Image (cartoon, rainbow, N blue to C red; front, side, top):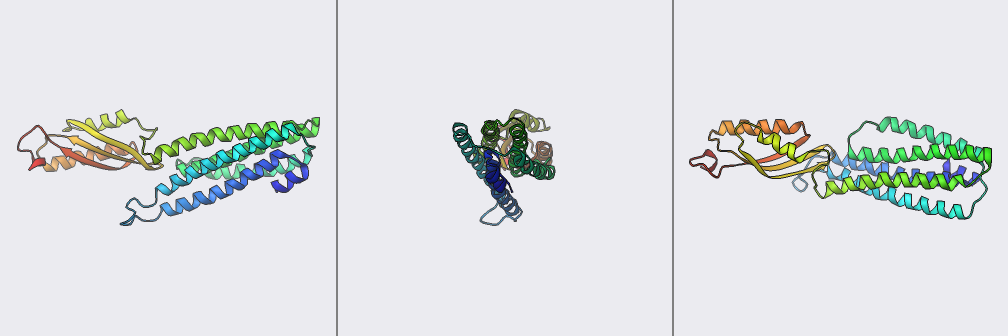
Length: 266
């Protein structure tokens, strides 16, 4: 509908939004496929399953958004140099339909903490902003006849989408490179573990995300507790405390280097 409306009305903003929404369709299908893969059970060859598939899909989505933004900016620049007549009324009607559709999709996707769903939501938010801008631009052109607003609004939309995509790209790269999740305070997590009675220290801590909302931790726990039952109790308490940080998978290695006759070294 937007492609037809853009061609008939001569609006770059409509055509840009149509291209943006087409790329979003591909991205949403990619996201859906990745989330479906994530539901598959782990195997001997893929012990973590397919959870990272959603991160990879979000990474591809962010790159696609950046490419689309660059394309819109270039076309807006060309249109600013060579203005063309635009039918503002038709532009407004088509943009209104796009706005309603995008608001409906935002209502469905809003509120999820899943990184892949958030990436899909960013696509739709970008489309919604485009629809609002096109609607405004159509009204402006219809009442004033000033067609320069069309490429200006297209450029503004492209910049907003680019900023959001760059932020998402940084976040997905951080997950792929196993950086500490930005939502977690590393020192607070270590302090929480060290506060468990019987724990004398925590070191060699590695904290990363398997996927959105699934954080993983490896650590060495120093303790001279000799009772193996007590050690198991300490381990379970540490794991329970870690859950409030959404660390759902942890590997804890207990060590005792300074005491003799310790059950951990027998």
